[in-house]
Length: 87
Image: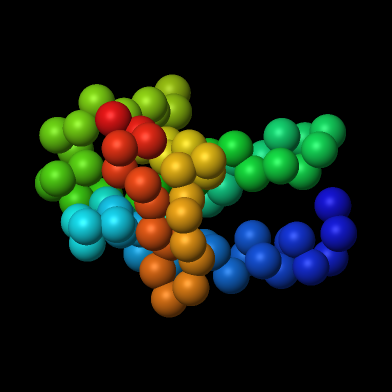
């Protein structure tokens, strides 16, 4: 993985995850990569909202909610996801 990719990943940690319509999901707690390619696969949420708890989203063995990175449509001050891609 290139240095710029590592820095990009670090910048995502702690950012708020919201849907296109502005619904808050929580914050980026961690990222799951495909080791061989370095491709981002999932965002692991922390401080998830009550709204997120009601959705039937994939979870880790520890019960942390996973958001597929393929649902991310924008990164900046927030991580914006396409909600229709995850439910």
